[in-house]
Structures are given as structure tokens and as C-alpha cells.
Length: 419
Image (cartoon, rainbow, N blue to C red; front, side, top):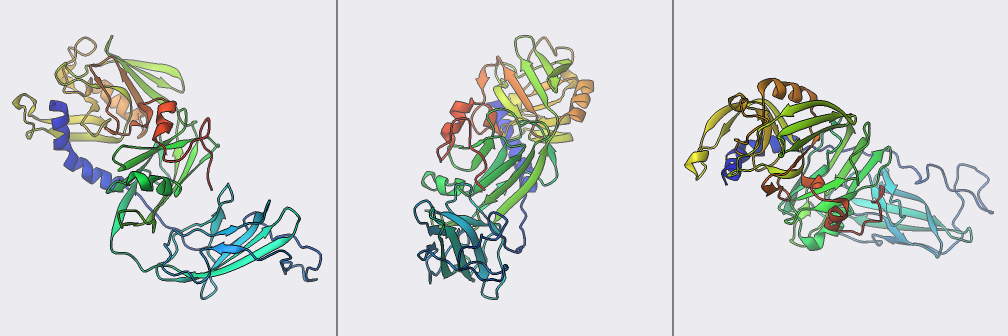
């Protein structure tokens, strides 16, 4: 109780940190390109001018949004009812003044997704060209208007910074306030795009109250991976009458493999880099009344110096104000790795903390200099299991359990990119 009450004392400070960690960026319109990067091939009867596409020879396509549609969400995607065996050849979307909108076709061919939210209260014209199994081309056009900006919106966040390097266990963490209702999660999840280089399958997992969703692979990310993320929430209509507020994007790197493993049986932390044991550190974990959590956590925040203030704890024994060095947050509940010179004499032998992983000043300084946000730490053998959502708990369950939290079906082994 003391540890979680102490968490309350830290929540206010963390709220500020979390707000600083939320990142978003937009993208300006670019010149539209054909989905496959090339103009559609000419057919018999094409113009002699090679720069002019061939005239459609098949029946007209029915485009979505339908022609004349009004008040469409700015999250609208362009689709069409295709002929049997047909495939989209190209999609163009233009504003009333002729400016083209950049976008990409979904990998399953179901629709074309603008690369940035459409503008509120704006008229667009979409043209879709498809080629049937018989080689005939079909085309359809639709002019529609987006809705005015709504008053009731839901806020979002993305715990990922552009051009930053993270540990191999860094999940993609999307946050929503208020939480996404269960019946809306599939629609929202379809608008959360992740791609990796080199390619690695993955899946999303929602926490119970819908305030966060985590994306991870079956195993830790490969060192050197580039993560490209777009949480395309802007304009998504929800069943509670709210709409998504903005798109958030980030491109980040995954660094070297670095992992910490703590065993309560011998009270030692074993530190591995690129699979090799590099150091063993004696620790003191949470005492029986305030045990540390067993499970796999990740470093969420690092502070070279901070103050733990638990004077609002209902248990007088757990009230204190202490300056802390080399603190690394593991849970929202207030568990950290940190320097604890007052417990150095029992580290490796006895648990005396309020739930944190205590190490010596020298070892804390060394570890602080080595870790990155997203590095994993696994603790085993304590009296408490890590609670789902108490930190970035994407790795605290097996892959088979993790994918049960997806709002959409997950293929065996995980899904690839949807864009």
C-alpha cells in the first residue's frame, strides 16, 4: 500500500513529464502519385500522346465517399466498389483549387489513405482508376465535402520522439483521454499505423479502460530497427459523440540490445549487453510489506536527481521526503531503479525498500549511464505480480496473451504494415 500511495505523490510530477513526452507532427501536402509509382499502362485506343492515360474501357466505378456527400469526417479514406478480380491502378484526390493530396493505398487494397488529415469544411474530388481481370480499365469520380470542426473532441498522445533512440523493449504507446469505448476500438486501431525497417510483425493490445494501447513484436525489436508510426486519430467519429483531435507521427530508432534481470532469490541484477553478461549488481528490493513487482517492465523515464515526497501516504511509516540520485522509473505506481547509499550494507542480502530496486551509488551511476528509455528489466520471485497497465506492461504477458488484447484479428506470428 505504501508504494502505491507513494505513487500518488509522484503522479502530479509524472503528469507533467508525460505531457512533455507526448509528441505529434503534421505533414504538408505533396504532389499525388500513382499508387504503384507509375502511370497506368495504355490500352488499345489510347491517345497517341504517351503522357495522356488511356480512356477507361470498363464500367464506371462507384467511389466512396459517394458523389455529393457532405459533412464527411476529415479521417475519410477513398474507396471504390471494384469489378471482380479488379485492382486499383491509381487514386487522385484534389481540392477545389486543384491542389493534389498525397496518400497511400492500404496493403489489402481496401482503401486509399490520405497522408495527413483532410481539412475541415473543404470540398474534395476523388478519382479512382482500376484494372479488371480482363485488362479493362474502369474509373469513377466523386466530389464530397468534409464537416466543420466539431466542438467535442478526444485528446491523444504518442510516447515516441522523432530521431530518438530507444531500447529493444520500447513499445509504441498510444494514449487517449478519455479512453476509447470497446465498440470503437477496432475502427481506431485501423487508423494506427506502424512500419518497421527491417520488417517485423507486430500487434496492438488495449488496456481494459481504453486509455492506452501498446504495439510490440512477438520478440524484442531487432537492434537498429527504425520505427515509423502514425496515430491517425484526427476526425475519427466515436460512439460517445466525440471526434479524434489530431494525427501524431514519429520516426525513431532502436539501439543495442540491453537487458536487466533481477532475481529475488539471490538479490542480484545481471546486466546483459548484446546477449553477453557484462556486470552483476547486488540489489535490495521491496520489503514484504511493500514488495517490488515481479514481471517485465521497461525504463520509462530517467532523472539524474529528484525528490521522493510521500507525505500524503495514509500510512505514517511510509511518509518521507528523500533526495534520490540516478532514478529510473519502471511503473506508474512509483517503482524505480535508483541509488540507495543508505541500504548498501544489505544490498545482495536483504530487502528493505518501499518497492524500488536499490543499488549502490557507484552502480546506479554506471547503470544510469548505460540505459535508454525502453530498455527491459525483468524481476522475478517477489510477493507481487506486475499489474497490467502499471507502466508500459506490453512485455509482462506472453505473445499469445498479448494478441488477445487486439481489437482486430491478428494473423499467426503477427501482422505486417497496413500501409
